Structure formats: structure tokens, C-alpha cells
Picture 1 (cartoon, each protein chain N blue to C red):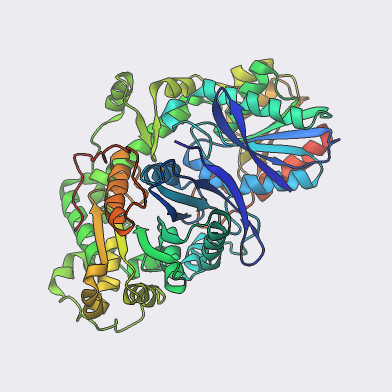
Picture 2: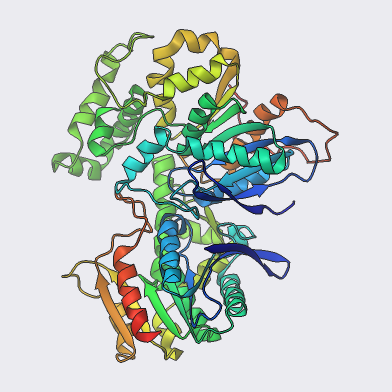
Length: 271
Length: 327
């Protein structure tokens, strides 16, 4: 059973879906979606994750950040600060619904993983974190968003009309960067560039799981290894066989089987 | 603008479906609902929240708008058995979600007293709309955005079923890259699609196929498309199609449907029309393209559903400089 609600936030609305749990649920989960079109591709897998967690007795909430999904605001009217505010609001709402919660975990995918990390470090929102393919280097991620724009220009015009430097100049002048139809303003772009997950999580001392998609022979990414090495007892990195369900693939991926299984097993040991 | 209302209703198979209903503030066309049928597997919001933007545009002209998640997708219940994305798309094109669309109509009738419906949507949503319209006369009109005529397949299928329009576009691309060293490197290193290249360069030597004659060998045309389209036209219900200029779908519509049903399609010419947004991609990712799409859509829709009361001021339809009048 689920309940979809609009949570009021300063006369605006954040859309959230609470998976019903027993009133005495002790363990809670907040799911954070990735950015932009990755959110749409990953949506069903996150819905199914929420339902599986709820079936195991967790009180779960998943939500749309303002500017995305069915929440208020246009995408270009949002930034990192609004997203952190959304997350804080949703956590408060979950705690109000499930006052018996003893532990609260944040599970985030891609940019959503960075967001739960920021929420944990800055606002102490979470006791545990599971980060699915987190954006650890914001500058590199921001560069990939520019690349997406350049690819779209090539497809539309058969050439690059505005190169990288020109796009950055335009953002300085207040024009948005169009990333697959999402209009990214400079404030948010700069926010993304400033993210270094190792720095963000330096103040987080709870159990942390980092999941990297790959095969058995895939080497851990150095930035993830660095993140985990800071607190090797409480932090775990796992390379998991998991197709990238946050992108268009040939397979129809309604579940993130690999990530889900590893996360559930880990939650049973920490939550 | 009144914020949308979250709704739930049951599919005809008893599955819980979830959606957002946008209610108009003014009373102009309150008994008309535009169903924005979800595209592909992306749910009720649509790519880059296209459906949220569309709904805002339509509601400002007095229409109800319902966008909802199909069985097994978005927030709805149910599961899909397919493991290949193209199989999901093709099942949609074969009418998988017609019953869900009809359940949405049932819901709107029952809960809101709405009696007239426009089926609309992007890509898979538009073909669902067409197939629904063919079976349900409560659908008074079809507004199809990027409607597919042919099935999806793998890269080998794509190469086999290229339209003349696509081959012409590819030829233009190859000729543009004649002075591009990287393109030559690709050509000489065996990484080009030589068969496609040859076909694109020799297409001018082949005559256009005879009209009203089906292809000599089966291609990837959706066999349900033609009968449904003609069924809707024969019942005198209007159809408006909006295509993206950079997409392949208009070529497929013209070559795999119009050319093969020329006589009957021309007989009903007064009941259908189409508009092409120049250079637009499939998902209309530029705000100007969305604006043009909303503009031409309401310009077509509004005379079909005249105001039932005096309208409150909605403001003019703002056209971008690239807007064209409907063909």
C-alpha cells in the first residue's frame, strides 16, 4: 500500500509517495532520484525498490525534487539549495508519519546519492547511506552535462553551433544550458561543480555503502576507493553486476537487481 | 493556475493506475478532457516534463488534462514481463495500453462528468491514442505527437527498413562529411555502414513506389496503424499530427501509410492535418519547439470544441519566431 501526497513547503508543493509501514516501523528509508532524464529512466526501478523495502518492514518515502516530476517549480528555478531543502522537508514528513523510527537511511542514485550525502553531512539527516553510482566529482559530471548539450547540437544542426567556452559564457550572462530539455542555470551548474563527495562526507561517521556498476574483474574507481578508505570499518565499496538502468538500454530494466540485492543485504547488517 | 490533483483509478483488469488531473480554472471547455497518454516507458511526466508543460498550456484554454501511468510503469501497479525495451515499445504499438486508456476515460466520466475526450501523447502515447480512438467513440479527436507507423527493432532492422526520406537525409549527411578526415578514417577502417551508404547514394535512381500498392515484401510497418487511422477518419473524427523535423517518423508516416492509402486518405483530407516543427528532435527538448507544439495544437483544437461559456482572459498564444502555420 502506498500513499501519494503533496507536502507543503513555503506555499509550494513537493510530491512524495510514502510506502505504508506498520505504525511501529523502526527503520526508515528515503530514496533520492538522479537528475533530469536519468530520473525518468530509473523511475520504475526505484518504485520497485521502495515496494520491496516496504515489504520488508521499512517505512519508505520517495519524492520528486522541486523542478522535477510532479513537484512545483520549473527546473531552471531550482538548484542544490532547493534540493537540500526538499530533502529536509521530506525527512521531517517521514519522521512525523513514523515517530517510532530508530534509524533512517538515505539511498540515492547518481546525483541523488550526492544529495543524500550532502543531507547527511550538513543536516545530520541520515544514520546510514547507500550510494548507488554516486557523483563523486561534480566538475566531471558538469562536464558530461555540457557534452550532452554538444551532442544534441550535433544531432540538430550537424555541427557544434556553440562550443563549450561559449556555452559557459552564455551561462555567465544568465542563459541556461539545455541538457536534454532541462534548463540548467549557472547557480545550479556551479553547485554541481563544487561537489566533491570525499569532502562532503568527511564529517559523516555512519555506515556507508558505495555501489559501483561493473563486472567481477572491474577495478574499483579510485574516487570511490578513496571515499571508503577514509573509514574502512564503517564504509564498504562493492562492484556489482548492474546494467545502467538510469540510461536508455536495449534491456527493459524495471528492477535494479544487483544494486537492490546488495543494498538489502547490507541494510540487514546495519539498520 | 489550479495545481493538479493526484488521482488513482482501476484499470479494466483491476490494476491500480496513478495520475494527475489538471482542472481548468475558467469554465470554457470543462466537459472536454485531453488524455496525455504516456510515451514509451517514461511515465506520466514525459521526457523533460514535457507533459507537465503541455498540460499547463492546454489547461489555460479551458481543457481538463489527465496524464497517468500505464500498468507496470511509472507509479502504477503491475509488472511487465518483457526484458527487451523494443519488445515493450512494440507491444504498446500493438495496443497493449488501449484498455488502460479506456479505463481513464471511464474514470473521467464517472468522477468528473466529462463527456468528450481528445486522445493525445508523444510517440507510444500517440499510437495508444489512435488505437483507443479506433475502438472508443468517446474519443472525439486525436492529437498525435510524433506518431510511429513502424515497429522498433535492433540496428539491423533499422538499416533494412529505412525510408526514402531517411536515406535522402543520410545522403546529405555523407556528402557534408566528404571533407571531414575523421569520416574518411571511419570509412577506410571498416566502421561505416557501407550498405546503407550505397543505398542512400543510389536512391535517386529508384522510382517512388506505386501508390495504393502494398510493399512487395513485408516491412516493419505496424499492421494496426492503417486500419485504425482510416477507421477514425471514416467516423468523421478529426486527426492532427505534429511531427519533429529532425525525426524519421514523418518519413515513415508518408511513405509507409499515406503513399499506400492515397485514395482514401485524400478522400478524408478535410478531417486530418499535420504540422512539422522544423529541426525539432523527437522529444522537443527546446522550449521554442514545445511552445510551437502547444500553439499549433490549441489552434487546431479550439474550433473543434467551441467555448461553452464566456472565457476568462487567457492571454494570447505566444509564438516563437520559428512558428509556422499548420499545413
